[in-house]
Amino acid sequence: MFPSEKIEEWIQEVNQRPTSAPLIIQFIANRLNELTKWNEQLREENIALRSEKRVREYEQQISYLNNQLDLLKRQFDGEIPSEESPQTTSKPLDTLNILVYDSLGHIARLDLEENDMVDGKTMLMFENLATDGEPARLSVIPSSEELLCIFTSGRIAPIPVSSIPFVQREGQPSDWGQIQIPHEPAIGDALACLIPVSKMALSDFLVQISRRAFMKKIRMALAPSIMENLYIGRGAKLPGDQTMELFLGHEADRYILLSEEGYLGSVTAEMLSFAVVEAMRLNATDHLVGAFAIQPEQSLLVMTQVGKAIHRTAESIEDAEALNRKGKALYSTSRRKQGVRVVGGGPVGTGDWALALHKNGTLSLHAVSSILESGTISLDDEILSFTVFSKIEES
Image 1: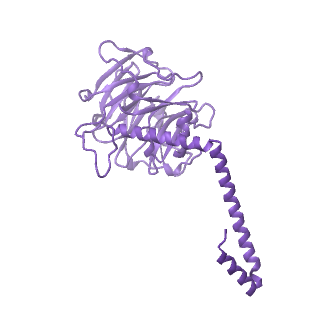
Image 2: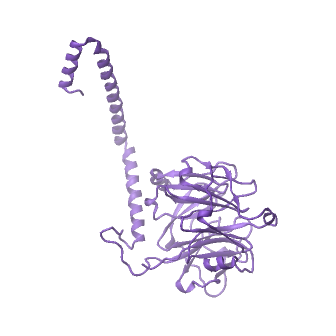
Image 3: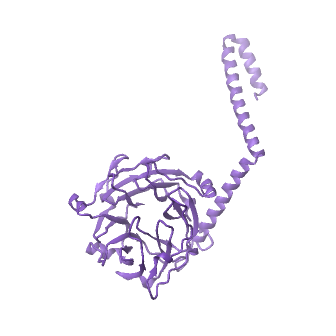
């Protein structure tokens, strides 16, 4: 506990200066209190280990890390490159797949090939596509990705992109009612979003956002428990609000929020906390239709249901001075009163592409450069959903 030399030194000190005795006794008492606390902590650790509680936690973390390593390896064709042996493939390791999904859990998967990259091309037509309530959403994901289905109840379900059946693109239009439901929502539940998680191990935290623009960060230390229990929580405070999106977040991230009524918000990851906070104040009739991270070299492309594009450079978008502030209007009040609504958007660069799902069931592909040049998308019917993506470039 104390070296014998130290004890002898204290005795000599007390003999020479008796007034120092109280100070020495107080120091010894404080040290004994610290040792008692450490002893209690070790005792609790031993009890936890004997009860297998801590062993279970360690096993959970090991299982999670092994799974994340496998997912990362899949992105690099079975081996993670290092500085000593960088990857030198001469062709893409992956192909892109289009996913169209709705709140009932239907997920349609289409392959996206090089010969598909034609501006204005109709990729597919869906019959009996639901146009009331929540519109179907769009995503473009590498075929090797692992997805998480995030439900409005807070439940999650993993699914590899490769396990989702392809939709036949030849011949007659596809009946939306016949599209497969890989994970059926429970009664009162709904599919909120699909997120790719293969690079979760490289993230600083998770970011959860609700339709009413409430956001929170989730510590990565909780990821093993989340994946083990298949539950992440609702991430919403208000009655009737629900999860809309989930990100793999990084400390330097900047997040763009788009509302249906045409308001734009920008918040940084630094502004968010690990508690649910209102990131942007919305009108009672409004809700978010898009949320994503944007990089300084990118610009923002926003699409309305009438096919009119709105373009903003990243540097022209001002971050909110604080949370719970109303966003900036993307268009005039008169256009809003005329019924113009935002259906989606995203960060874009030169050479990127966009997908639009129309009310009549048509899924169309567009070059972002063409949209920026004309400012519109030609359409036979209103647009329900819109997203942007980048091609996989050969290295």
